[in-house]
Length: 509
Ligand code: ADP
Image: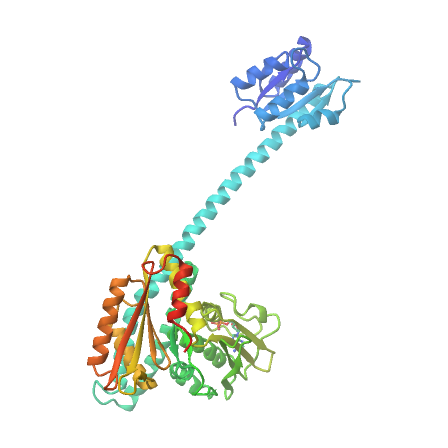
């Protein structure tokens, strides 16, 4: 290691000489000066780590020297050689900026002890700095690895998903008899394969969601109006076999007539699959899982939904943690899964600006209660218009709303279309206008299209929709299809103005 460089300052040549030669024998590289001014000159030309200085000196005394060194060279350790019976106190010296002092007359042993301490401290500090740099680097490596892991998980899951979808589709085709008649065993074996592919697909979906959330991209929900009963049906179809195997009854007590919700349909299916699947895992054979609504939230814009089971329940110490990533219950003793299901479920619900909570007691089942946005104008604003507008502004993109209306030209009034007709129209629209980001049919007589396109393209799409829907037989004869467009920033200078205009266009009917 390099020698520590020390500057010794004293106006008494004898003391200076003595201390300097002693300190040299201790292994320091020594320079001397006979007053403050000379010392400052030396310090400005060469680097030192320690200053050992007398206080009473001509030209510039120790106090002034210490102050100057403190401001100009904050890293230098300063040891003052204080005079016996002097007019100042040790506190004065330390307050001035000295790190330590030796009181004259001192023994050389004392000087050695003080210097050794300084050197020790400096080494410790150097080690600490070194360690903190190493830690910083390790941290950096970990961050890079973590990032690599996320990219890896994401790309592997994507790569796995495509072939799996193909396998699933072909097995479904065979099961449906498209490859010719099946023997009983063939059907059974294919059924088992199919069930396990569904499990794999779910797992991959979970991983994909997880990597999206982790990378900060969010889930990118696509909202559309939906009937909850149909969503639950889709989810329970996927789990039919698992339910049957454990002889668990799934009871959906949802009213088919209840108002529609504005949700990302596929994600919501995932939510129900996660919750029902947990119900199946943690409920003994012969149990029951039920799905209910619990009325509306206070503002009447969100629906409360409950999924409960008659299973083993959740221990009080697990309850606050079940929504955490990778958390698996301590007490359940069952380790089947990734501990990600509920974390992603919560993320999806919160993506709908809803909330989820759990109520449970060990031994008496669990209930998961969450809220979902109803198909209402304020929710269209909250979940679609505002976020899309913000994104448009951030990315410097245009944003347009296209409203499509149906007019009964014989009765001279707006037309109400049946739910079935809506299905066809929605399907046609989605195929027809692929560049449109979101299609929201609003019961029962309107459709809104939201897209990052400008006014001209919005007009073109509007016209295309008008012609196709009228001529394609999607609407009853005598129905006029009309459209209006509204574009940002062409028709509104500010976001606020655009929102105002949108409120007029998308007003509650
Ligand atoms: P996992 O994939 O491990 O099931 P989840 O995030 O879905 O992960 O669930 C986390 C933990 O919450 C589970 O390990 C379990 O301890 C507990 N849990 C979730 N749902 C239920 C339920 N219906 N009954 C009892 N415990 C549950």
